[in-house]
Image (cartoon, rainbow, N blue to C red; front, top):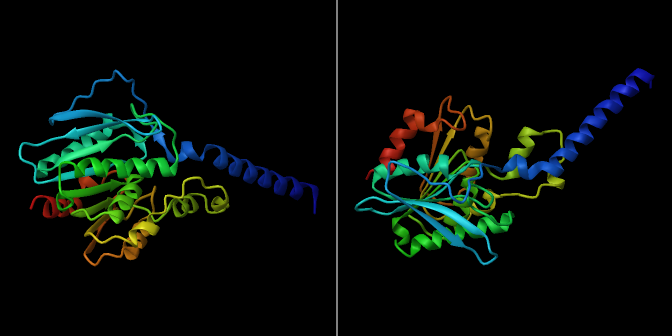
Amino acid sequence: MKQGVKKIVYGLLGIYIIAMMGLVMFQQKLIFRPEKLDASYSFSFKQPFKELNFKREDGALLNALYFTVADPKGAILYFHGNKGSLKRWGVIASSLTKYDYNVLVMDYRGYGKSTGTVSELNLQNDARFFYKELLKQFHEAQIIVYGRSLGTHFATLVASENKPKRLILESPFTNMMDVAQARFPILPVKYFLKFPFNSSQYIKDLSCPLIIFHGTNDKVVPYRLGQKLFEQAACTDKTFIAVPDGAHNDLASFKEYRVEMERVLAR
C-alpha cells in the first residue's frame, strides 16, 4: 500500500474511532437535551393550572403541571419530547384542554426543575407513577395517554401495561437502536447503547385504541419507523395518519393532524 493511501486509510480509521468514542461518552447528551429551570422559576400560561412536585423513593423530585377545565370529560397524560422544559411543553400540552380534558405533563429527570438519577428504568417508573396519579381522579376509560417523540416510548409503555381510553403517538420510533442506526449507519451502536427505549417490545401488548401521526419529511425520526411501530401494534383498533411533507416538530400546523385530533378528542 502506498504511503499516501495509508495516511488516508489511517486518517479515516482515526475519525471513525473518535466518532465511536464520542457516541459512547456523550450519548446521554445526544438523547436528552434538557433546559434547566431554577427552583424559583414561576410558570405562566393562559389556561388554569397547578404546579405539582412529587418526591420519588430514591429522593428524586419530579416537577409537573396540571392544566384543568371546568367540567372535564377525562384527562390526558402527556409525555413530551427530548428538548426543552415545561416552560415550552406546558404551552403545547395545555392546548389540548380545548377538547375539555385536564392535562398532566411532567418534566423528566434533569429537565426543568426535576432532579434525580437518569436511567431507562427510573424514567419508565416515573411514567408509571404519573399514570397512577391520574387513576386517583379518573377511571382508565377516561384517560388518554399521549406521547411525542421521545415521550412516545413512555406513553407506549404505560398504555401497554394498562387499559386507557386511547394511546396517541406523535412522531414515534420503534427503538433507540433503529433511530441511532438511521443517523449513524456505519457505527456499531448496538454494542454501547445505554438507553434502548424499545417501544416495539411494549406495543405488542397494547390493547387500547391507537392513533399514530408521523410526518413524511421527518429528519429526526424516520417516517418508516413510525410505520413499522404501527404494524407491530397488537390492538385491532388502530389508525396511522401520514402527514405529507410534515417534519418532526410541525405536525400541528397540518390539516391532517388537526382534523383527526378534532375527530378523536372533541367527541
